[in-house]
Structures are given as structure tokens and as C-alpha cells.
Image 1 (cartoon, rainbow, N blue to C red):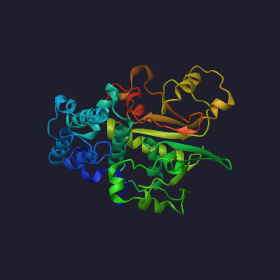
Image 2: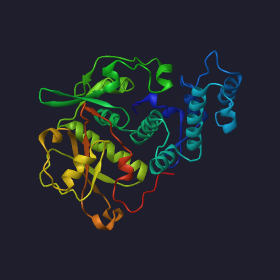
Image 3: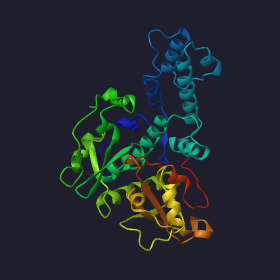
Image 4: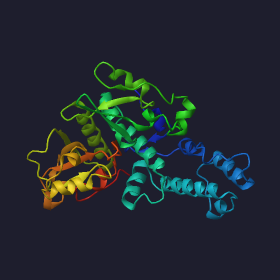
Length: 335
């Protein structure tokens, strides 16, 4: 079986009989390798002592008073965030359950970086055994911002951080440990180069064609199916649509933060100007394998998923919306 996304840290976790990821000390130590937490030379004795103790036992209880005793204010804030997040993970049997609880209760002060890391490693678990590299590349939209380019009539997305070349800080400490190159040339994934994805999956240096009617949107649909099945235990079929004809938006889910206005306009049947409509990147129709899991008022009706880019041509997908926005009677996380 081919491996991918080593930088997610999935190989440092245990997989339980239920298929969920169980936290290990080795995984927790990855957070201690963050530059924000490594004590600098001028750090106080209390901070250095706390750090050394956690390296030995990353699960050890840390009191609020322990953190308040740290001299540097920025260090105190970083430790508060990290310990609160660690404790959230440890309260649950699996990372999947911890993430679903976070989604339902609200992310609050949890750093977006930590959320993206969770999505990364959980999605790695959900997609384990996938043979189609396009599905894996499309799934990168779940946890990495994409830059959209229109090229010769095609809609191409590439990893914003990779093509920007501005922020070379690795997404996780493991990237740095493995010596994965920060930059490389960008190719659009196709039949000829798809096999190269496995060796370069942690470089995020391959682009994807999301033009309507092509394989990119179909690949994203497959990734969303696996995500929903893994986290909610619900089987669905998702079909990428090439146009908006005969679409009755009885229920829709926006897949990014900026699509709500567009979705509401479609839902009300309002006329949408060409510029606004041009921001829609993907439209999908979702149907439930077992319609009985749906809320009665929409049972049997398709659910539409809408993905759009921002005004500055970026895509910031919110995969949590697939967990909270579907019209199902009971949303039970993988425990």
C-alpha cells in the first residue's frame, strides 16, 4: 500500500479497532517541537522546567498556576493554548471524536493551525488505501488554502503557501525533521504525472484542474464522501455538477466562509450577476444511501454543496460544514 502525507504524523498514532486514531506520547511531542514552545535562551527557569518535564511525560497534568508563573507574557499565552488543546485531545478516545466535539462546541481560541493539523491527520486516516492520486490532491483543499488561476479556459488551483514562497515555515515540525523541501516547481496533476504524487505529497507542489466537467471536482466529491463516512458513519453519494440548471435548493451547505450569500440568493431564486456567479468553483449534489437518516422535512430531497473562491481568488474550504450542515436526524461522531 502506498503511503502519503507523512507530515500529518499519522504514523505516530495508533489506530483502534473502530478505525479511529488514538493519541500517543510521540504525537503529543510534535507540538512541543513547535518553535513557539521551545524555550529560547533567555527563558525563565519555570518555563524551561515545564518544557523538560513535558518532553519526558507529555500527558502530565499542568495547572493554570504553573503557566501563570512563566515570566514572558507571549510564552504564557502559547502555553495556555497548547495545554488547553492537548487536554481536549486527551479527553476523547480518538482524534476523530475530539475534532467533532470541537466542531460542535466551536473552535473558540483554538489556533487555526491546530485545526488544520487535525483535519490533515484525520483525513489521512479516512483516505487510507486510496489509489487515485487525484482524490488525495483534491483533499488538500480541506486543510490548505488554494490560489485560483484561470489559464486557457481552465480553472487551476495551487497551494497558496507553496506558490507564494513567502512563508517557508513548515506546517508541522515533522516536515522540518524530514527535511522536506519548502519549494519546488508546480505541475498540474494529470494521467502522465499522477504517480509522482506519492513521492511528493508532503511538498504540496502539484496543482489541480477544477474546471467544471473534469476529473478534479469528481475527485473532490470522492474525498468528501470518505470524510462524511469516516466522521459521521453515514454513507452518501456526491456528484459534481457542471451547471445550475434544474437545481432546487431545498437544502444546501456552503463549503467555505464566503459562499453563504451566494447560496442564499440561489435558494431564494434571486438573479445573480455574472461576477458573483463566477466565484462559484464547484456545485455538488449529495444524496443519502439511506434516506431515513435525513430530517423528515427534506427526506428524499438532494442536498447541494457549494464551493466558491473569495474576491482575491483564494479557496479556504471549511470541511467542518460537512459535519454540521447536513440535514440528518442524529449526528454521532466516531468514538
